[in-house]
Length: 124
Image 1: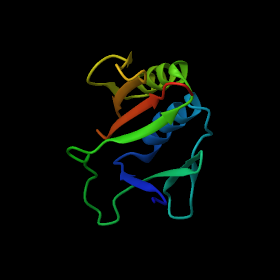
Image 2: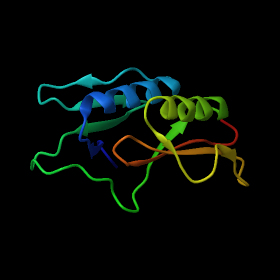
Image 3: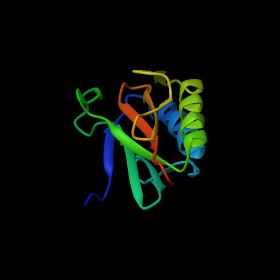
Image 4: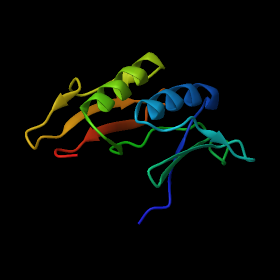
């Protein structure tokens, strides 16, 4: 259904440090910078792109929005969370934990305030 998700950043160098660390924790690779200066992360068929807003206004986080990332197992979720906090992210909601449905979940805000979650599904 989706080709990509794009979010804004007020500091692309800071975002690159954060997202490189968190995507590598999920088994991905560091982001690439395209000709327009946007960061592009490709992993398991999906793309997350980070850019300075094209209208020149400051980037803001989506109120009520969350970007969910799939992890292979609870260890990857924990590593994603720990690496995110170590690279400027903020742990939010509950600490990384198992849910009643058997999934394992963690939540972060990136350095620009965007809400992210990583989740491993039961039986994967």
